[in-house]
Length: 250
Image (cartoon, rainbow, N blue to C red):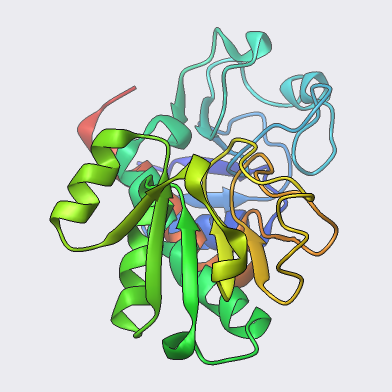
């Protein structure tokens, strides 16, 4: 039996590493549209604005080049033009989301270290948000000796954190000037440029998909796994795709 064919339509380094990893697991990989491809590998996330793929190609143009029965592999594949295709959407896969958060947190440590004027163990750091990334990043920072405070808008999370001995405050009670670094992981507007004006020397880093910190001195660090750890990101994509295929969860 011939190896199943995957057409790698993704243009990021992570997609290329994912294709390589899948090739090592017995798939035949092509980087040009192929009429007999059983699978099409997109970037994760796959679509930008105006029906454009991450690499800039219009989605309808790509769909003209691939078989109707191809299985699509990517993330955020809810577009109406894709409704008739079978697909594996990694942005609906909790395993992928958790592992991607872990990679993001490790990449964020590099950004934080470079932005600080002191070592992490000397820093007083505010982490806004107690989601996937916030949990892992806070744990890493605490292990490295940072004085970490978590800010959340959820009273139950604040109570749980305090019960565990972790400093926690409501997002409405933040005093930015108290911190060496302010790191946002919540995809919501949290602190305006006006609110942050009194702490010009603090490192301000926003990891959220939507900006939560205002001001021109904020480092908006999106998509860190694909930028700082594309091989790790690609291998994660491949592992999760293989898991879905082995489970037959399509």
